Length: 570
Image (tube, rainbow, N blue to C red; front, side):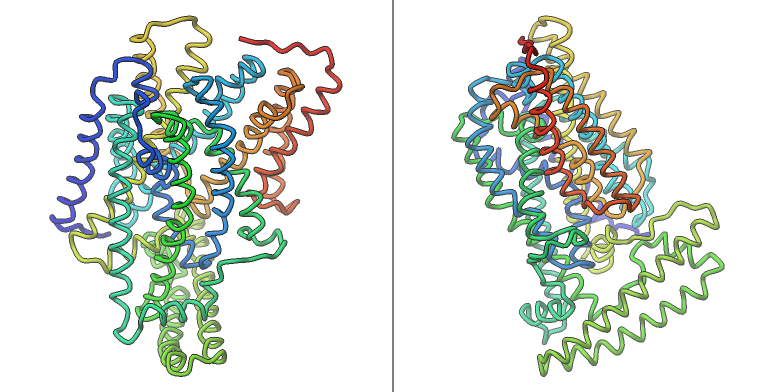
C-alpha cells in the first residue's frame, strides 16, 4: 500500500475537479436536442480529433499498453496499422452520408435503408457491447489503483462513475468534447514527463540509443512481424486486415465515436478531425509502447519485483508456498546481478554474442516470473482468495509510485483517471443518445425538444449507474486492453457487415439482413468460445473480418431465397 503525499493529493484532486467544473460550465445552456446530442454542431476539427482520440484512449491504454511493451515489446503497435486506412474510408463514405441524412445516431440510417427491426437490432448490439465496455473503462483503473494504493475498490468505482455522470448528464455532447480536449492535454503532458524521467533515471553512461540497444537485445524492439502464424496475435497482416475491419466498425458504426464527429461544424471539419486522429494515433501508441520499453530498460539496472501486483505477492508470502516464492526471489536477484556484468560487456563490445547472453538472462527471468504466477494461483486457490497473478497492468503504476517525484505521482494518477473519465463519458453520452433516439423516440412517437433532452439525461444517468454496477462485479482478464478489444471484436464485425450491406449492396432488403445478423452473432460468439477452449485457433482480432464476411455472405444467400421480401421503410 502506498501513501500519497499531500502535494500529490492536491495535484490529483484539483486536476480532476478543474476538468469536471470547466466542462459543466462551458456546456451550460444545452436546451434542445441538437445542442445536447450533437453539441450544436460547433466543434472544430482539432476538437473532434482530440475527442475521438480521447474516446479510444481510455485508462486501460495508459495502464496496460506500457505493461504490454514491458512483457512483449513493440509489436502491439501493429494492432493500429489498419487505422489510417479506416479513417480514409470513413471520410469518403460514412461522413458524407451521415451528414446528408442529418442523423443523430449511426443506426437511424439503417431504418431508412432497411427497416425498423434492423435498426433496433443493431442499436441493441451496440448497447450491449458498449454498456459492458463502459463498466470496464471504470473498473480498469479502479482495480489497479485500489491494489497499489490500498483504496477501496467499490468507492473508487463509484467515485469515477459519479464524476463522469455529473458533467456528461449536465452538458451532453458539448461537455464531453470540451473536457476531452483538456484531458488529452493533461495526458500528453503526463506521458511526456514520465518518458523523460525514465530516461533520466538510467545510469549516466546509458544514452537513449544504448537503452534501445539493450531493449533490442531482448527482442523488445521487434516492431514488424510479417508471418502468417495465427499463434502470433499481433502481426502486420492481423493489423492491416483485422485491424482495418475493427477500426471501420469502431469509428464508422460505434455511436461513442460517431457522436464525436457528428458534432462537427461541417463535413470538412469532421473529415479533418478523423484524418488528424489517423495521423496521430499510431505515433501516440508507438510512444506509449516506447515508455513501456524504457521501463523494461530501467528494470535492467534496478531490481524489479518477481510480481508487480503487491496483493499477489502478499497472498503467496502468507501461504505454504512462501519458501518456494522466496527461493524464486533469490534466483531472480542472482540473475539480476549476473545481468549487470553482461550489460556492461554488451555496452563495451556491442557484439551479437553479448546480446545473446542478455536475452538468455531475461528469458531465465521470465521463466522465474512464470513460476511465481503458478505459485500465486495455487496460494489464491487454496485460500479461496481472488487475486490477479498476471501483472502486466501493474508494471507502469508500480514504476510511477516507486520512482517518480512527489507531485508528479499525483499528475500521472490524474492522467490515468482523466483517461478513464474521457472514454467513459463518450460511452455514456452515446449510450444515452442511442437509447433516446433509436429506442425511446422511435417507439413512443413524437416528443417535444424539452422531453427529448430530459429523456436523454435520464438515460445517460441510468447507463452511468449500470456502468458502475458492471465495474463493481467485473473480473480482471489476462490484460485489460485486450478485454475491451475482445468485447468489441465479438460484435463489431457483424455490425460493420450490416453497414457495408447498406452502403454497397443496393438490392439487399431488410428481412435478409436481420436474419443474417442474428445468425452471424450466434456464430461469432460460438467461434470465440471454441477458440477460448482450444478447439480452434482464431485470435480475436480476426473475428472482425470473419463476422463481417459471414453476415454479408449469409445475407446474399438469404436475399436470393427471399425474393419476395419487402423493405419496410420508416
